[in-house]
Amino acid sequence: MTDVWTCRECETENDVEADPRNARDCRSCGCVRTESSWVADAIASASAPVIVDNTVTLYDYDDVVVVTRHMALVTYLELTGVIEKDTPVIQHATAEAVAGRHIIGVLPYRLAALAQSVTEIPLDVPAELRGKELTIAQIREFASDPVTYKVARQ
View 1 (cartoon, one colour):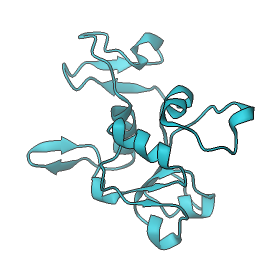
View 2: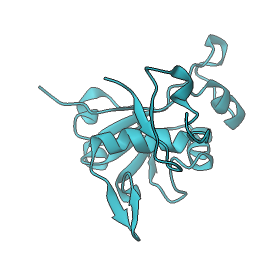
View 3: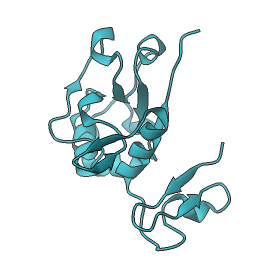
View 4: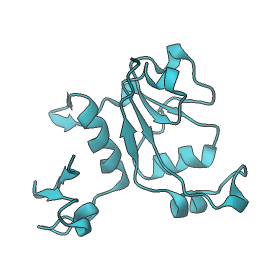
């Protein structure tokens, strides 16, 4: 599967596999792809676009739930535009809380299979910091591009 994203400014399709430099910068206008567009693009591939106020939104924020115990991660998600300030945040997921929703966080497979999609913000945390609460600056440093999954029970 080729990773292709469309620039929101000039509508140029950028093929990341063919030219890795296009992973963040548009080859036509040079604008930078933001963290929130990575998540929105990934979630859009898992669901249909929603139209709000004549604007195409790649997912409905009402269907998004963050699952984490780490408040610095929540702040990071807000600052990067991945979530809105009023997005529900839960520390311990239940089947009822995740069913049919777009989850940002990490879930056990049995719960992930109930969700519409699960978006992970991979963090490459050094061994000496694992198990410790991270600062927003550390999350920015260790965060990789969001990855969205659709999990199905067989």
